Image 1 (tube, one colour):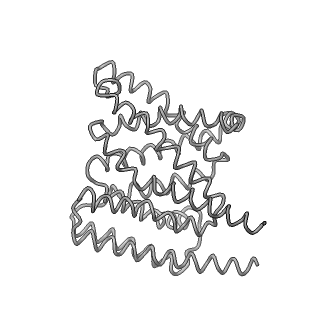
Image 2: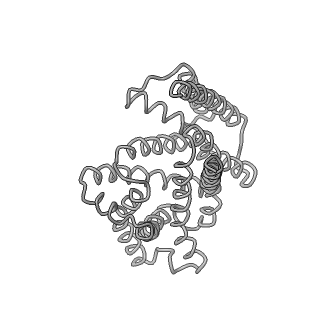
Image 3: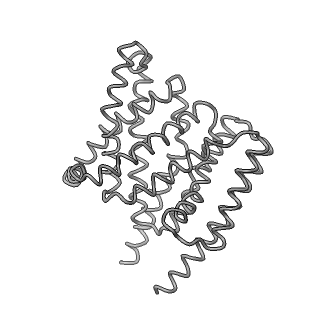
Length: 303
């Protein structure tokens, strides 16, 4: 009975995590339907409606007390103010990339992200890199250098997305607050500026909300679901799965985005980009292999 319960728990966790990464991976389809709305306006609506939804979820899941406790902690609020600015940049650039036909760049950025985490761990947390991790990082650097030389442009979209998300995760870990309450506070910190900006837009007859169509209104409000639902599914899955499993599942989202960019939206996929992606995938292969070996070694040592 106990074994069956563990299996059910793992299966449920796997389904939850898979669902989260699939939603994240196919999010470009959602934001493509809002291409007539300026990216910054979409971001402001995302902050407003996400805060309203997350505040309701905080109440529904009876996390009000921990939410209020975090609000009273100056150190926590200082950390979350920083993460709010970083995640705001990440969200804005992601939306901008989608609506400017740069989905492939966004995909590359999130493929690079695990390797950025390794780099940040070494530079900031003084973590020692294992040999295969060094090799993976060098492969990623070679890919960026190759893209810069062959395309004549630095892949700033991909790297900004990768490093902003990497720094977000790194700093967010230092905040003593759970994911739901933390995201609710992050959107709260942007709520008043976002409302003021949207009110100003409406006053100048430049806003989209309530001016274009009911369909667009619902899509703008629905950005809250695109934000909160995958996050909740991810946290549900993460609590039930091994970290190594989550590490492999994280490649699902950029893989879905890659498929959308190349086969659905037919973004230019030159030989240079194909080689760059191949090198990044090779780097991720080394990184994943090293993760498995390291995890198995730790598992044997700890029994």
